[in-house]
Image 1 (cartoon, rainbow over the protein chains, first blue to last red):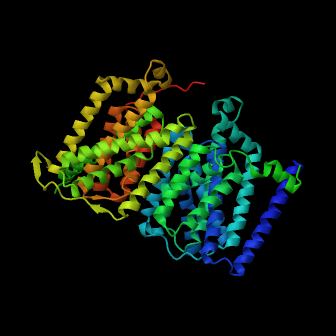
Image 2 (image 1 turned 90 degrees about the vertical axis):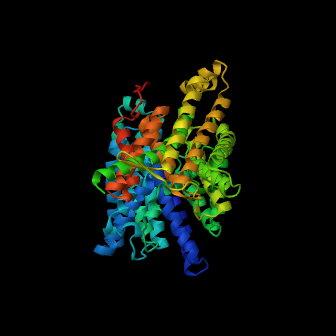
Image 3 (image 1 turned 60 degrees about the vertical axis):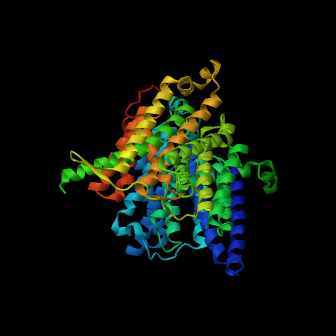
Length: 313
Length: 295
């Protein structure tokens, strides 16, 4: 246990150094606005990928509706900030709560489905959330909700991301996480061993959905506008692709997946059609040659070489 | 126009739309039955079919029926090719890898098409002059009659292939138990290719018919109908051919009634709501049989 804490402390120190360097580059204007925006997006996508990994990777419940929860968070945050003038942190927290409640509401009935059926049901529910939002005039309907102040800075995005990553990491390493992994490996066996599978599946859905809501709130406060078209099931596919690319059941893998895909799409943003073709080819080749993802279910921090560098043991 | 007239009109529109969903859903359900794969690229195969038909009619100046047949043949070959290149190497891979590959193939088809034909929608030439027939309370135009006729012919042909030919018997055997079928000397790979080919050809027919009916095609037109067709397949009971046909028609009618009487913005939500309800109350679909979970 002690070695884990040591590793945590070192990971935090390294992240803080990384943050200081990047923030320094931003303040010195060496990285321009385009890259600041993309760095914020990378942080937001890491939050989405890591939280989805809890549902898909650790609990083994294939969910294709993550963008729906993100939409709920984005709209909740936007309404709170614009119409009720709440501080940003409060907006983020309430976005978490709203999306988590919705996650539980959706999780409870659909939890008895499994595999492909669960995937397609969550996809449908995500789309229903989006269509309902599109028909509510209070939040701007199909035109989107405009006039949101730009509160999300790189610092906000980075520290919220750091919090979420550590929260999910500790969740996975707790008895809750072990119950989730037991459900993934064999649900019937887990139930026989006395794991309350419904409780842990719904809990995983709640936590995952809640943090998707947080990411949505950050997202809405980045672009001045939230628009229903940002939260289609294609967006959900994107997050699933990130975690599959990094490796299901690996937090560092999700971080790498989110980082790589966001960077690649930023670099290729000048050629939108070509970008998607390259993206598709990478995806297919990855599934051919490394279907378990870049990292499999191994954490980067548990590699011997990393341990030696950090001196943790 | 009275409310009853409007109801009958929406019913006809719904059956036309439902026939299209049914044609796509048949391919979905066959592929799922045989490989347990949600082929997300199926909707895009339908889009490719629409474009092939469009080019046959505008560039080669072919009449509708030859264009339809050429589109079905070429797109069927494309389906076989996709299976051969993208799905066959993953035959023993985890299901999620194949699903992600299907999403990759879907993106690939959409954006390669967009690269070559630009994202602008194309106007499908007006081939059939509008003639409306009054049959009892229904008003049917000749495009709708063509959709009904072609759908019925294709379904009859499919039923014949699946039920009365040797290949059809092999298809049913592979979908029931692939390994046992292989032990009986059936070449499962060839049957799976054949299934992809037929499914893609049906989707291509739907693509051409949609072009004729709505007069417009674009590279992303396959996304929503693809998903709806999957909903239709689940609604009828996945893997069951008459179920897919019935599911498609029911879904089309519900959508037409929702957009006619409530609001057209809710028609997609209605389809997904049906999906959720079916999954919660009868996950095996309307025509499916219950199977018990075994350890």
